[in-house]
Structures are given as structure tokens and as C-alpha cells.
Amino acid sequence: MTAKEPLAAEDPRPGSGLPPRRRGFWARIADLAHHLAGEVPATPEPVPAQPPQVVLELLRSLGVALTRAGEPADRVTQILDQVARMYGATGVTFFIVPTGLFVRIDLGSSSQLDFKTGGSTPIRLDQVDALYRLLDDIRHSTVDVDTARRRLDELLTVPPRFGPVVAILGSGILTLGLGLMLNPTVAAMPAFVLLGFLTGSMRWWADKDPMLSLMLPVATAFVVTWVVFGWAAPLLDSPPLEIVIPALVTFLPGAALTMGTVELSSGDMLAGSARLVYGLARLLLLSFGIAMGAQLAGIPTLSGEPARALGAWAPWVGVLVFGLGQYIASSAPRRTFGWLLVVLYVGYAAQFLAGRTLGSLGASFVAAAVVLPVCYAVQSRRSGPPVPVTFLPTFWLLVPGALGLQGVAQIIGADQAAGLGDFLNALMSVVAIAVGVLVGSGISERLGRATSTWRGI
Image (cartoon, rainbow, N blue to C red; front, side, top):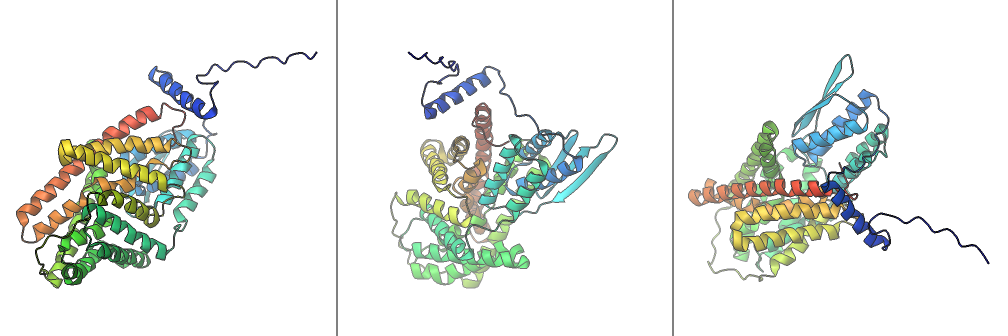
């Protein structure tokens, strides 16, 4: 007879006898229970202290990348402070503005102050994904400073996943999706696609010419409006502004207006006011381009008969088409299309259902408060992208920028009273979204950091 092998020690963790998938679920529940009971999970050991000058350079570059990724100033400060602690740097202070930052580091008997500019050009979604995965590795002490700097330089200079032809195609698909959501009529569908190709081509051209890049919003608004008022609207017998606005939605400063309001609410008066002024100025520039294009082409004569609508199903299909266009045009990371659709449909459904009982302002608040926890839940999955990758495209569904643009265009034109009312309603909806962002992010981070699946600093 052979002796029996000794029994393995019983695993005392909750769910230890369950299959791996269910065991992971119970482990997260246990982590959350420990956090709510006041037990703080162990944090990873920081890497050995690095030379202050090397850490300072990394912090400067990370801060600029985070501002270009759309993070508010207080969030950038929090992330950089944790990165500094992970690398053993002490006495580090930051001053963040939307287009750059100051970093001061204590060297013992002296201190060193440095500044780096960043610009207002946002980084692509694939770059945002790589940036937050780098931050996640820093949090888990798996990269040293030199490796982190090299990875950061590589992700900021990597070319887009798709070439210019595919990106222009994505712009047309994106515009078609917005048209389905904002103006689902049969006659306007071909115009949306062609105008999307036009705006995508102008973006590609502006990337090659710095001077045109400065004038891109005005030039695009002027050309699109001139084409629509002069040819598309009379040919399709459709109200011209309803065709113009979907083609220009991606130029609207919805994220800047919302993030500016969030920063002002959290006490960052300089950064918040700068973003708000930038957003309002961009909105006025777009409206100026619309006014100039309309004056040159003239007001088209229409039959006055209502256009044939596609039906209530069109906006829901539009969300799918819009998601595909965003995935291509914004160079989203691989294997994120499904997650992006989940967040887009949750946001649109929350806004649609809440709007039936709470009105437009309540719908904006509820949608923003609901979407962020969903983004954090997606981030906690192994294949899930970081929060900004799925949340940034959702701004175009939550921010009623098209209404604000039409309102400003009416202020410049004849119907000034109606335009001012529409514009103020759009700004109030931006405030509602900002409050929803604050509530949703607070809940998400409070619960998310309590679990072992939390990713990112």
C-alpha cells in the first residue's frame, strides 16, 4: 500500500473552491468589503529612488501628455504626485495650465524649477491607451524611469494605425452616424457622407500645413456651409443648418467646455477659465465661418414640405455607425470597438430614458453620472481599454454642442432672440454634464480603488 499524500492547506480566501472565473468575482467582492471596513490593501513597493533630474524630466513630459489627453488640472496633479512618490522623489510641487506645466523638485539644499509647453492638439485614442497603460505599469513598479521615458517618447511619436484614405473614410462614416442621430431624414444621408469626406480631407491637409491648421475650424465651417447653402440644400430640399451641423460636430469644443466647468467646480480657476474661454472662442469661430459661408452662398429657397424621416430606429443605428466612424477616424486601439459600443449605447440609452421624465438638463446629468461608472467597469476587465478611450468619444453624444452652434449662428443672423435662448440652454446642459462627471467619477474611484482589478493611477 502506498501512503496517502498530505492534504494541501485549505485556502481561506472567499471563493477559493470555485472555478477561476467565479473565484475572481468573489475576490473582488472581498477586496471591496475590506476597503469599506477600513482595511487598506497593500500598495506595491516603490522602485529605488531615482536621480531628481531624471524624474523631473519624466514628470514634465507625462504632465504635458495628460493635459493633451483631456485630463483636468487637479487630476494631472494627483497622477504626477503619485508617479513622483513611486520613484522616491520628495518635495515635488506642480502648477498645471491647459497648455503646459511647471514642476518644482526639492534637491535638499536647493530646488529646481522647470516648465514645459504642450499645445492644445489632443493625442489620438491609441496614444491615450498606451499612455494609461504606461501609468498602470508605473503604479505596479514594473518600469524604471529610463524605460518609462522611452515608452512615453515612442507612444507620442507613433504614426496613426490607419492611413489618410481610411481616416477620411472614417470621417464620412462618423458624420453619417451623427446625421442619423441628429437629423434622420432620407434625403440628407448622401450629403452627410460626402461632407464627412470633405471635412476629413481638410483635416488631413491641415496636418500638413501649420498655417491652415490654425484656421481649420473657420475654413471648414466656411467651405461646408458654402457647399450646403449653395448646392446641397436646394438639391435635397432640406433645411441647410440641419445638414451643416453634423459635419461640424467633431470641431465643437464640448470636452473643453465640460472640463473647464469641472475644473472651476474643483477650484482650479486659472485652468478652468482658460478652457472655457478657449471653448467659447472656438464656438464663435465656427459660427463666424457658418455666417460667412451663408452670406456668400445666399439663403436657399425650399418648398417648405417636411422631409421624410427614417423613423425612431435611426438614432439607435446612428450610434453604431458613429462608433465605427470614431474607431477609425480617432485611431482607436485594437480590440476596443466592442467596449466603445457598450459605453456609447449606455450613454445614449441613459440620456434617452432620463429625458422622458427629467427633461434635457436632467438627462444630461444622469447620462454623465451613469457613463463614467460603466467606463471604469470596462477598464477593470483584462481586455478593457482605459477610461478616457471610451469616455472621450461619448462627449459627442452627451454635449449638445450642435444646439449651441445653431444658437450662435442664429444670434449672428436674423433670429437673435431664439439663438440666444438656444445658446444659453446648451451652456446649462454643459454644466449639468460637468456635475454628472463629478458625481460619476467620485463614485467610480471610491469603489474602483477598493478592488484588486483597479487599473491606472
